[in-house]
Length: 160
Image 1 (spheres, helix red, strand yellow):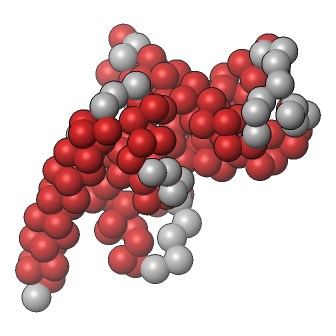
Image 2: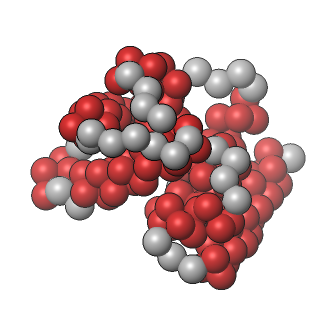
């Protein structure tokens, strides 16, 4: 199975961007990662087993490329992700506070949470994508949820 570059971009660009933004925390870097991911797709001359295999490959490339970008030396002088929050559309005010809480998590928890809740991947699929054990994914999800609960409860108590 092979999708054209336009079809693959149309179908998966938003998901790739969302995951890249989750790692990079910067709109411009996430755009670059998305572009790089689809450029690598263009360079690959292979057929995929199915669309799920293609999606997993794209997300894996995006995670790896986003991590490379975050380690770059020039990254230290960039605009903080909080400044980008004003540009992002949210349907509900609670969505914005949840998103901010997720973005404040350490990367390993943030990526696991994103893949599990936003991309609907199972623990075993996330483990394969991130090249870690299933137990590691479960502990990252558990710890990420605990951190989110603590943060959101503090915010909720402060509002009262």
